[in-house]
Length: 322
Image (spheres, rainbow, N blue to C red):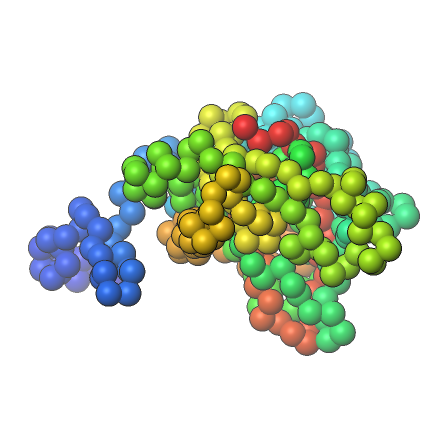
């Protein structure tokens, strides 16, 4: 819109301007249209970052920021690590461009934020067992194209994950992130009250059952039993409530009839798919993304087959959801 058109525009000429302050339902199809007023406060809070050791550029409404002015190779100062951690809490998804780091650098950067996981079903290399490699191409498709938090089947799921682009396709292969606190806040009050005290069961078999040999399943079940986590977790550092169920690993609502529970879960799963809660990362080689697994879900778009996409991930051990 050019400046002349901007000066000529009058508030109220848009036919929809009379309904901008409220949501509109199309009940026949279960649709809700219109602005998301509950995002405004968080969006305003994040609009003007103030950091002494980093350049922080907000990218999305309530999540996503580009971090520059720091190299991820080598040891960072305590002040820089503290500001990266603060930015992670604020923006939930941090993007670092042009970071040609080695696998050792990657692991070293991640260790500055906590102890690292070793994934039992996605093995790393001999040199860096904590670094999971996702190598996709004509022979191996991407199966991460569903909304999920990582490893919620663990008693103590990841605090966060740091993903590095080693080789990306010319087009496609983006990763989407959804702010699950915004998704929780967007539910009606009655639903929030209903789910605040519920627990859900999480089971690795839903996603990884087909990669475990039959003769190892009893051993793996003993090591990774079904765990119960709150449907709504409270972030241990920010205090914000967020949805903590996902279709990859959540099997059922504890103590609820299956039909009723599945209906409720489908509704809660669908919250991640609302675009206003999302930020989308388009990858470049040597790009690094650090996300707060407690606060966001992610979805790796599998639209690049049969092209090659190679990523490496280090995950930081978190806390027991409360």
